[in-house]
Image 1 (cartoon, rainbow, N blue to C red):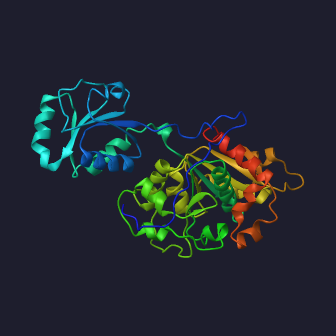
Image 2 (cartoon, one colour):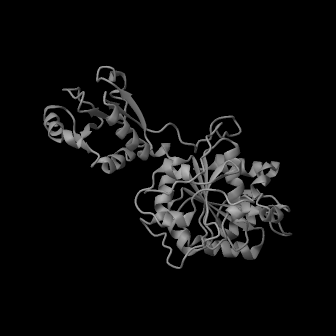
Image 3 (tube, rainbow, N blue to C red):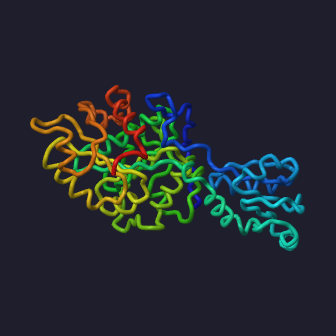
Length: 378
């Protein structure tokens, strides 16, 4: 997908999120899969480098097969340029011969004489090669997508989504906050007093094709240390479609590759809940500590995708209610208590909601949520 050039730039992580033992949180992705390119050709190196970036895989480059010997078997895939092609040693993983269209006949002739099992003729095969390389990635190396939904209207899901994104970014996690509620007025209003430069949903809906994760990150506005994809003041048209294969799915696929954590404020629109929600790894349902909202949340769970789901209960706890009673009434485990945030409304009006992430109680809740990802009871 070609994105309009934006002026926002994604922030680089400075530290890793840690659990109470000081270890990197288990949900954060390890180093991604790396592929090996053997070539002395500068143009081929540049073209393969662009493809590898689109696939979000690391690229190791050596000028000769002999010099690449130490990485030959460990790489997720090996690509050998036609300029250095020879009868190289067979390996367990995929081996590709790569070159440009002017070298097509030589590529196929050399492939028949070598142990290569695939040929990529560039630039025609660039899109195929990017898709092939992306499939080599270890799923554990991909980022985590957390969906946040209100069990009832006004539960505080948007507030929690913003605060989780802000806390994760403060911890040095490369974070994206996605505004999935096209009727919500735009999360950017809550986190900045000025209109940030960068792309919004309407800009992406006008494009087509695969979204490059790096291009997406470079085009989105950055506020409070995290990237933001919001509706802004545009809202959505009645024809907006987040169905399979549509822009919403493309965005979250790119987010999974380009960020360590994407927090998605799903809103309560059934379309977004089903289509955006199904691309999440886990869901958090925010419910006020009251019986009626708890009953509404129980009904909502029937409409949610079949994913690990936990509750965050918004304080204060009403008399006669306790956390376990709420969990039992909803049928879902409680992960934490969202503290009373009396300044939230005013901070939202000023575009300073993310500043509340500095609160010790908020940080405590965020830490509990973030270090519990991938292990929340369903």
